[in-house]
Length: 284
Image (tube, rainbow, N blue to C red; front, side):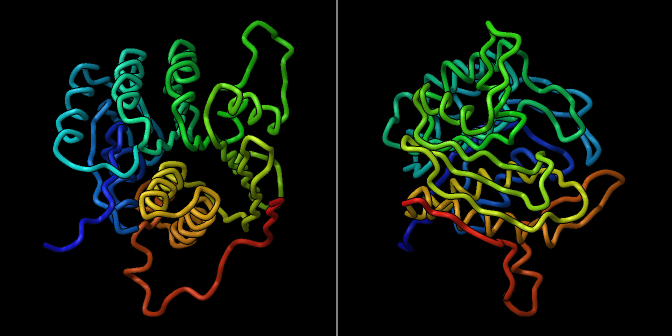
């Protein structure tokens, strides 16, 4: 029998445009040599411009999907994306708690690129209390980091990104990768934080345009590199490089955002010889 590829179980919502959600996760994981298992958390009506509606799947169905494949196949990593409801958050938290040895990568999708709200405050609280404490790497953008780390009792609370990461780690997760796409900087700066502070910081050329599914791609790429045996800092480095290349090769099939080309390598006559990473700091 051929050797098994690393198997990654994804919890996320469908995206009929193929730009984000489960479709993005499946393409990314497959492109990076993994076998993806998919548990549908919600069905969306969306295109490259935004999300029009969401129908959450019954939480018991979500849990049953996961338990069926977990009892059948060895899973090397979990990846969690859009969740759909507070009941689903609780159901997934219960499932993954039975497998504490499996790394968990959490992409906290709170809004679409257009700004459509995809998580209520109750869901944000559930993510914070039930999922983050079980997480190996959480990958919020700067807006999501601030929302997840906010002190709900203090209306004037305005922590910087380092403090947001510290608070998230204090809830129990091992690493926080804060992405800087939404920050007003010349380059996109992504910073990985651990228990002792900054683990690595990478700056990337800011590409023109906007992208549908870039966060899904990055989180799934991290899950793939961890499933393939890399340490978290090395997995984050390689996943960023892969994601930047997908954005560099992105295409615009509709009237909205560009879609990352997760199979860019299959369309190139020669291997890429350039990298978007401009500098790197590694305090260790």
